[in-house]
Length: 249
Image (cartoon, rainbow, N blue to C red):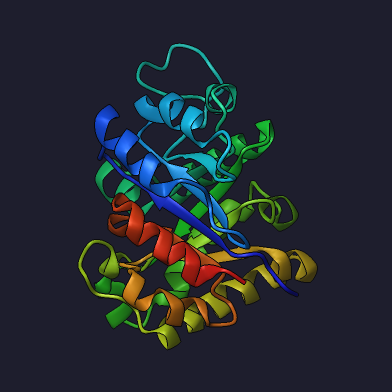
């Protein structure tokens, strides 16, 4: 099945109003034949939403609460994100799992909450260097996905995306080889196909681990890699555009 490529910019905790304006002016409009999502910090969502309105790019958030509303100081609900124009949301990024103690069960709850209001989740999974060296890559990723699938049938997840992000390749400059990445992407799709083959065939699986303009084309040429979740390289508009161009199909 042909899948349209998707490239998402994860700005993480970076940016300012002035820096964002410069980035957005350089970005201009989303490339053709590549779905593009920009995920700024939540305080800049309204600014970026306005700038993206006529570009063809979509707005994403970096996190969402699993709760709908109430006395949860500091949390941002899925309904609030939808209200300010967000269409996509990242859940389960390895930095959230490692630094903030998010469990796979919590990630599943967040994905479920996002889907309940019509947001499209980008569900992140990935192994540490120690887990890879122990030969546990598939075991770790399958367990992370299983917790999400308990709450979100693959038919519903197919409206969003899965992002494979080897923790050892995030912000380190190290990148899985295209062959290593393809092997894991194919395993993820096979696991999902065990639940629903048609949905798995159509669901986009992204790679997120030090993607750069210099390696994007080779990574995206792999049959089960459908684009990328881009961190550091997304902070430079020209680099992000080059990565998007490499993903066009």
